[in-house]
Image (tube, rainbow, N blue to C red; front, side, top):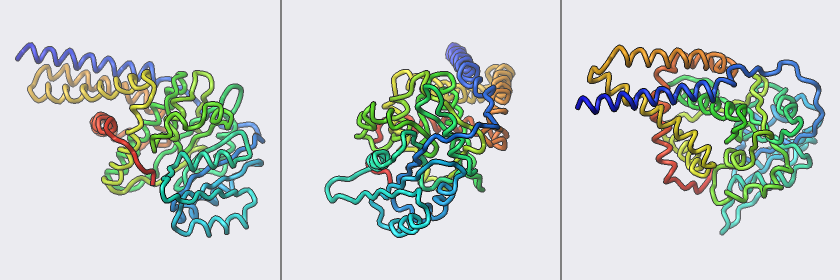
Length: 371
């Protein structure tokens, strides 16, 4: 029994060192990254693309915010994807008011079921501009300079721009955790991009070029998977030199979080189902972080429960927590989530349980629909 305790303590130390590695080697660059406040005027023609299925209310609330952006040269392409609500009539009304709005209608086929990737492909084909900016119908740009901020990042060899899309703050435990999980996901993929290891992006705030899309055959490599229009595309096409990030507060795009645990479960189950298709390198990096974090906490709790080296355990836990605060404090502020720093000691435990649970579920998940 004593031998097992010492073996577990060694496992705990290995997990602790692994977690420090991720903090220092993976996330530290995002701490020192400074978003540019003053950007030059940009006239790069942009096509904003939105795939919408039965999104009448969201289009009514948020589409005008995109159509009224402070940017000189852009169009908005809305793909009305097999909607059965009143989206068609609303979009016709907006087309009469906004010359920059283009509507592509996808009708439902009785035998062939289309998904979001097909709708986006139709939107990309209809877009007249080389540089494409993507968001969802339920997303709200925080400012009228969203397009300007994202467009300014297309310089040199940059073909992909990763934005950040947090969830709106509301009451309740679930909203807090969803915001925390989104923040951690953002830290991971934004840090990876800065390290030349971009592996995913978020379709609510993502930009890339039409040339990149068609030269790599679009979504063809993963068209059989319903999800992954954002993260699998970035995972497949990102290189150390063709990705940049934009995290200035004016470039954030917000949306409402799920209000029920069941809704959140089905959303994450759908998203996690594509992780197994990432490149081997990216799966290893993500798995090591998830597994080491999980065992760090589970072994810590077990050894503390049997009163094995309690002061040593407490010291290691506090050291890691202080290091997390040191690394993450500035990042939380940049990503407008400073309030979540107080919940980190508790939510970090839940986060690593969640990662391993949904990672396991995702291994056996096959998504069949996107709406």
